[in-house]
Length: 396
Image 1 (cartoon, one colour):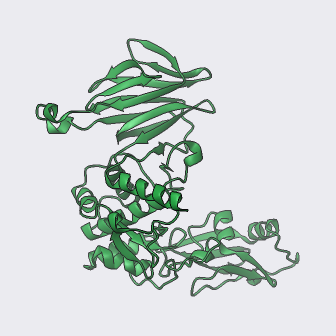
Image 2: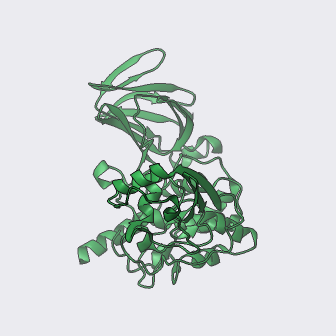
Image 3: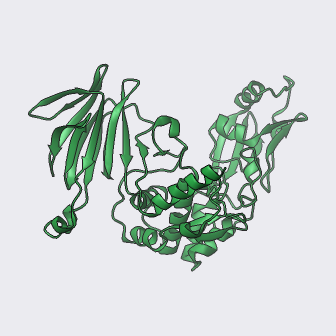
């Protein structure tokens, strides 16, 4: 246990000192071909410690997956096939920095997927490319603070208040550190999708986001035992957040359901969907709910003035999360109103509803609430501390 704690402390110390994080990018894409172009700085293309090419500003390469390896080429030359490729940004010494324009000091690379097609994204930090099941596997290692800024923008957009961005930055930092080894078996820390946190590379240089990340540098959220919390959040809770155990399995002291007065007039507060009674019956039967064949549509009515965990019918229960994912609903916070042979589903909120409600938090910031007040509104009994002062790291 002492070794585990020491390892955790060293990890935290490294991150505080701007240690890079490894992110599996385009994680849910089966990439066959991609276009890589240096936006600023310079990259060295290496494989097995051998330099293959220098990717200077405005130079480009195409990387393509084949059964035999990763093919590297440009308009003039085919560089051959390789098992693994490192795309490493140049390191600039102190004195050289004095002679390089500020906007060219950072190594930034554009990546545009060709197969499948995806718009250009910019990434800072080194890249590592290999094959996984005949597709390109790409890992990005951005500076940790740059990663946090990219996540804040991807998760929140660019039109919020500074205090909201400070709130989101602390939450994203805490989430990343708590989930640090979520993709250890895949060879990187976190992925770039909602399975971890959305990350689309370097942000659009939003001054407020950069300022928020800088002003909250090293700040994280801990529980009453000084453990990093699982800083969960969703788009809109519909007026009431969820208990952790009502969505997953365990009860967590700081993830308690609470009424939210700030999100009910926001864009994603309400939604509607209509399905046939036959479709709903088939779905329930497929989830081991036994129903008589002559059951009237009115029997499926469901009223949820406050969040519940189960939908009950014919003296049987099914988790609302099962219904949500099975019927592709926006949340578990809904009522069902029979209408002839159809069921009108009137829902509230978007997402799992546990932890911070993003639209509620944005509205709180607009109303003048400070970032720490927002955090403590959504996470019960927590503290905000510098990583340097967190002595009881717990399990990362």
